[in-house]
Length: 290
Image 1 (cartoon, helix red, strand yellow):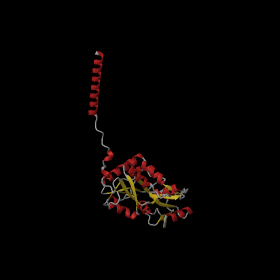
Image 2 (image 1 turned 120 degrees about the horizontal axis):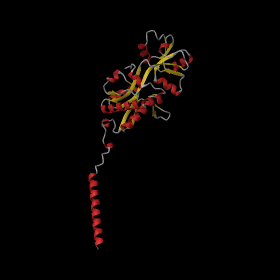
Image 3 (image 1 turned 90 degrees about the horizontal axis):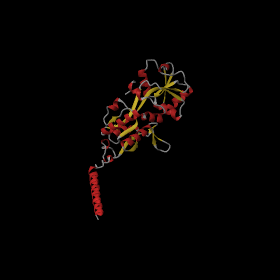
């Protein structure tokens, strides 16, 4: 009987201790943190459509934004838009519209952002209704020549040679403003790239003055027998335009673009879509056209 009594006391003490430990454990347990997904970030508070980033784009400016053979929107701007949405935790909603309506649509709040090769200019930096990000690419005014042409290797070699350009080209004007007078000695104008490149192939013109990224895309696609001289006389930059009514979103996008630049992602996507890339380091040392 004594042994049985001792055993009962032991079990009672053990049970009491277990209850104490259980109470202590329960009392020390902190409540589970709230699911961050339940809270709407500041940058997503004023979206055109909740949970979605409404992105205006043309869909007709390869390789920035265009439709592939399966009628899917693709290109550099589409890659950037999808990446931004991934990091913002938003669903992409691309809306295709002619260029003429994109920036007015943004300024009226129809879109959250416009991704369509928006060139950063002084006018746009000061425009009402939009906030431009830091550059998401580096473009520039460069020399284009027929592949294998060994006579032209830089700006010092073009004097006395025949220039071909598309009528109304802003790149030629930018170059003329920065070259010594008399450097461009003969100029032939064309209605489009097609005629100009045909004359370059046949030898009727020696070189063209173009932007850097466009001809690189032609070389990537195998559509032209040309070379680009990687020596821009002036830089052009483009960026993401955000509706000014969403300053928190604009700030977050600018932050992400900076991260993509630092990680090398921008150069990777530019090379993928255009076939070549100017270094972002040039922004620290070269003139930028605004």
